[in-house]
Length: 354
Image (tube, rainbow, N blue to C red):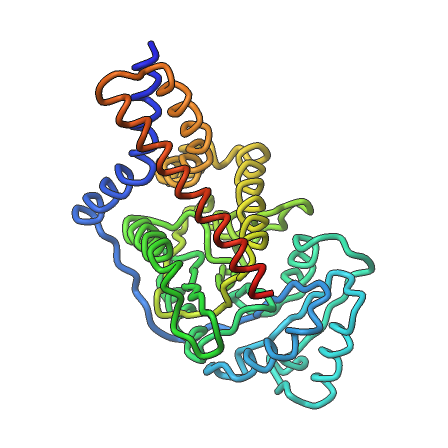
């Protein structure tokens, strides 16, 4: 029985990180789908849900106003979730400076919406989209900077009537003007490879929160406690029969967090958000509503289960101490030991740097 538990855990972990990608690779060779990109260009509403972003908001808005996209087809909506700092004042000042240009013949390209209290990102997004006038809604955060061509690249996918949502690529840099960080390169290349294959086969399973877009006609208000808007919102397109595609030439840049605590909080948020989606939204479980159910469970749910499987694998191995199993136990101990040493070393380096 212990051997069955051991090998079940082992092959489940192996499948999540190696077996599933192999299936995707073979699947794409057999049935790769293409996207009919092109013009005409649609009208776009860029939505920023912000809370106390006074240090970043001006830089972000100037970046958006410099995008290579017809001004007559573009509006920027800053939806403040009850900010208590100077965020709203800075947006209002930019409006008064005339940095925006006329759009839709009804109002300025830069619009500010305020909430009465801090009620969460979901409420800010719902409020902004309700008043948005663009055919395409593009979501981003205050922190990331866009490449000038990224909007043109991402919206070109909506020329294909089968596309309901699209996601760009996030590049992590360690300094302004940097091209990428080697330390996180392997993970991002692996993740981008999976997303591209899923997109080529049918659809991605969410989006990059820094840069993603959806047809306004497909947007449905999300629950106020939603953690992963960048999964739930684009998956609405899949539930309606459309695709989510990956656009590798639509680039957004962000800085790598230098403190492990920051990355830990992000990972916990992502895990909690995925558990929430599975618990509260039955559509993710339904092959009838979610035609990419197999991909979703292999990619997303599999990773939720892996930490528990690792514990089971280690505990079962403690009772199997002969031959191969003994060697495997030592390999596990060495692996976790290296991880522990790496974590301690990182904390010491970080402490000296600060």
